[in-house]
Image 1 (cartoon, rainbow, N blue to C red):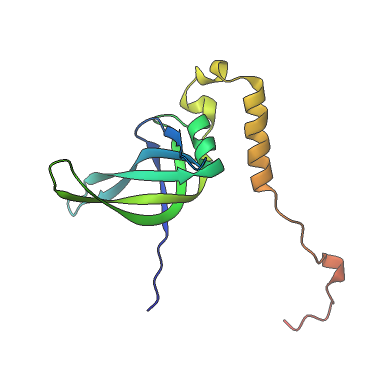
Image 2 (tube, rainbow, N blue to C red; image 1 turned 135 degrees about the vertical axis):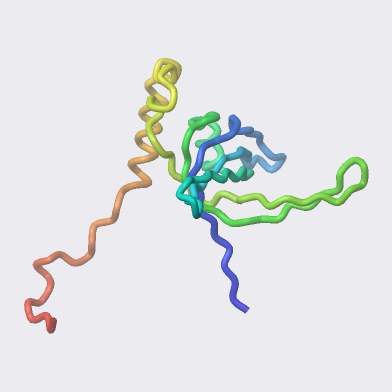
Length: 155
């Protein structure tokens, strides 16, 4: 039986990220995000539905999100669904679905979301942030150049 567990969400953080380090030394970052969908009703009016999603991230990605993201900022998250189950203090069984982050993209600029942020971040953070993004966005050059292609293409 085939299965596929992939989620892609674009939304805004509903709270500041909570960062902690596990006993094994792994950085864990938990945050919530709101994802909205606008639908048109039969009478022509629009209705907005908002879904609130909990996100868990780990490692270097967790560190970056904890360092650069704040409540209200936009983020694109790619991940998988995980079911968390536990028992409450009163003995009730509880569960919730959480997205485990596998990849993400910052959306928008830091200055656009908070004009005061530019003054609060030092220049070294800006350099590191820019280097991190440029390293992720580098595309490898093709192994074959246009000159190497034979001109007898059958189509």
